[in-house]
Image (tube, rainbow, N blue to C red):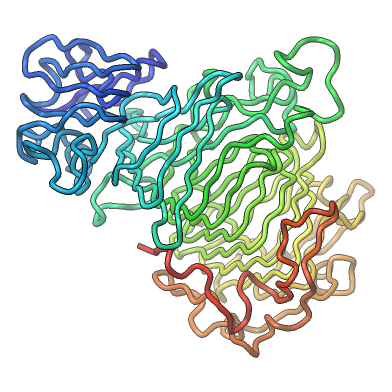
Length: 569
């Protein structure tokens, strides 16, 4: 037996098929199983639809007789059947049962409502609309799960240290959405792990079957400023508000906030879109790993490992690893969210991507690309300034980044691509490419507005180390002055202060490109110790560690701060 359709009742018309063949009759399908309070599986025909407050029973086309589905908060009990799909629940694409895998009595170690942590644990079928804590060992997202409440009472999802959250795999043709977690503007995520017990977001597939794109990913949305114009991408929304990529266009997928104020009332937009929400908190991510995420719904619309849309300065993202996403590791749309101790490894498009006016800070960022990087347009960093650079709205992206390491494989196309009018300050960085890497340039500057920032000194990389090739042609500013990237960043120009060029990555590391065991820490006597300066800020904040007077994300000959909580499967 198989689960043929799962309907997300709180969104109405979003369907997720659990197999390639979906019948046309939704009657009797599993509906709302695993919601708050959960639902127990039935064996008879004509199962009823579930509701947000209590799951529904499995009907004639649902899971096998006696197969139970675990509830989200003390929900349904495990079924009496075994682990085979006909007895313990429908199989997911990876062959693991979606629900009810535990035999009678559930686990001997964990509460019955936790299901079997060796299999699917608690299976989540419905949105989270009231404050919830996930403390069981394993939660499985059977489809896109949205965390949402109201503007006055946002819903908070807490995830305890050591919890694993798994998502089922989707399908592009025919379209079947994967398991994913989307925290909306009326929700907040508090996921706080520890060095010994990190929180893991990963695929529901067996480890041997896990590849980039094996589930959806994690998305946090808020109201902080984004520089999108009115009707951006035919959204019919006012300036300052946009729909998140790769989601269905519902209110739950919006980020930013109308420029004209609450509700988008008439009266003229302020100089900065979404003014007043700069500090908006999307929540906390600490000691979190995100593996094998990514999902494509259009030619340029994809879920990333971690998406941050309109997240403000009160959002905390520290000690986070995104590994092997099929698209970007982290993509940031506007806001002022800050990042610290970030590890981005083996992501197939861009490791870090920013756009739409991101004006946050970052320190201690470690990036390593793999040889299966997208040979079309992959970058260590893709940096965009405006959503619409030819008709800009609001201020451009202007992050300030200290202590960054980029190790770039032979198929990664660019180290950093500055384009569409971005500003940036990057200091104490290492950009080291494979001898066959960065065919399109270690640093590539695109668009005349970006050229203007070179001229103004508002786009600089200083006190840094470079190893790689450079674009053959430069970028002009609006006055027609052409800037050659190599000359600008390594010569005597305003962008070259304190920069050095090395002949080989081996000058810093013995084994820089080891994908399964990255060698992050450069030698104690290497060039990474030279010509760095103390990190500083321009706004008086205390975010940056000012003692990190070295180049790269790790002190030469010092501690590997990734040890103990990261993994490279």
